[in-house]
Length: 393
Ligand SMILES: Nc1nc2c(c(=O)[nH]1)N[C@H]1C(S)=C(S)[C@@H](COP(=O)(O)O)O[C@H]1N2
Ligand SMILES: [Mo]
Image 1 (cartoon, rainbow, N blue to C red):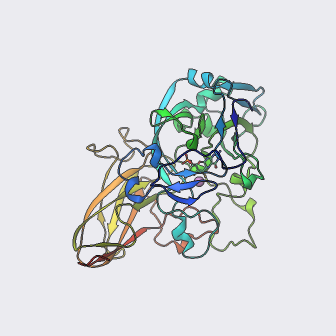
Image 2: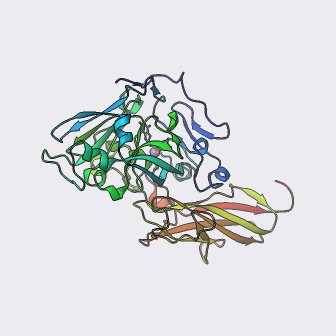
Image 3: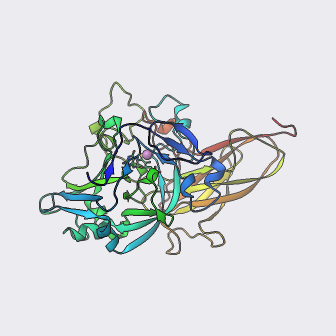
């Protein structure tokens, strides 16, 4: 592939911010500290979680870099960066969340397989690029197509990185063609993040952004795009990122029995407090994020300090100073909301948060009921313990 190369070892990794919490070194997987995550609505690139399955690719010559687009669409062609840039540019503010966010706390119930994450395997960025619907139209697939004449129903994104799960092959994922050709779905071929060219960690020179869907479908370092009949058979679609019932274990698992996870469910987490914070009695600021998949806004965030017997509502905002209205055109539909509440804490307690989205979906109370062997989609009520005392602990 001209212009870009996927190294087979970790000798040429980019430098990263020293305050990131490293969950795995090779491949590099890291998240920001909780407090840094909620210090701004748009997450700075340096503080954005990094989720990789192999060494970071290297662009050797951006002029000769192109992606191949083909498959079940009657033709194929090469798409250079200048072709992508010639299409209208959109800036979409969208939260990317790894399906493994909060896996560490799920693994405390029963062991799960996968990289451990606290609550910061997500971030909110302004992604700049061309709409995939425009790109597909450019190559002959009209808007709002769900099946092509040759039977194509999915769009597969193939990267250039070398992943051990793929036996050294590239990362792949797909989305339905109907979503890819719907301009309202805001699926992007992005070349910018927060107004700057994507950096290597986040997919330079070109990645997919699929708003409202688990991060695993937003393929970085694109090499090719292909219209295919069924959803991608790549490892991360077919044998990973599927949600199994609690009864399924590694001896009785049947991967084909479940569909690849796409939208993520409603989620929230308190980020102003760690487990276990020692505080002095009195007012405590409880802040965090709430987000739902599929473009569903956040209707409410509830806080409790008596294990869920009574609740009060936190205030929500996206842009500071502007009140957030779920589902309103003034709000960023693909983006998280931050929440804030002042709580009076006289004694040591557990502080709990849960969010409700505009469809009325609520987070489940306990992690036990949603335990699954891959440890994905832990969206249980988020709990932090605070210890009240006058002495330093
Ligand atoms: N090519 C490629 N794309 C990828 C991945 C990867 O390992 N390789 N990881 C996926 C996963 S699981 C997530 S959660 C997001 C993370 O994106 P980020 O590192 O920009 O935060 O990228 C997705 N796209
Ligand atoms: Mo992920």
